[in-house]
Length: 274
Image (cartoon, rainbow, N blue to C red):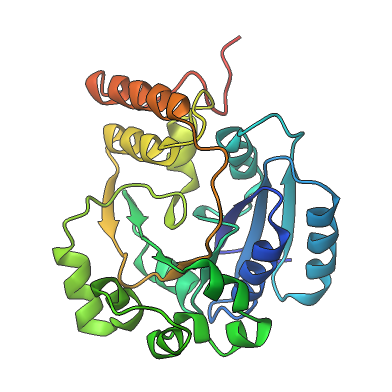
């Protein structure tokens, strides 16, 4: 097998109905030379069975990286997944984010040494998330604002994320007030840069561990580019039972230290202190 040009890390935890839709969305990608590395934070047998089934049905290789369920340990499993990536360039997204057919192509086209790419997502309500079928994904309906409106989606400026193309997408990327940060649902960068800062800080649980990785990349000298209107993924709705104020406060304190001390390296990442 030839080396993939890009490795796509998809994080998941016991959400096989959403993960299956996401995997079908990658089967429809216009860019084909990629592998999927599933960062599985302790899912049970239904996820194992789904991955075994999909490995036979999709046109890209799937690597399943799993560890025992020990609470919300996304940073740990992402670090394990980074080490399993065979490509020099890594795109990260989540098992509840379906990718438009040009999603991987956009990341490949816009990648550049010394930079990481920052995208966003388009949030769908629960009723539409549940109604999406495999045929809908193959027809790209979930990325079509007119189809979503027929399903009850309300008009909003955010709908531009789905309709912007060419110059308009470029213009909106340029004027968006959001800082191009590392967003775990839609960001990509060079594997060597992620390894150079020792990956994710494994002390961090829910809330901002992706941003903190990006902040250390900045401190290391890597710049970022905004692509939220050109790299499109739609976010399927779900409850967030793992979101606690305690974990958010702890993570904010770690991020404050990273910024104040201009840290590029974490002692709590891929390489552990003796």
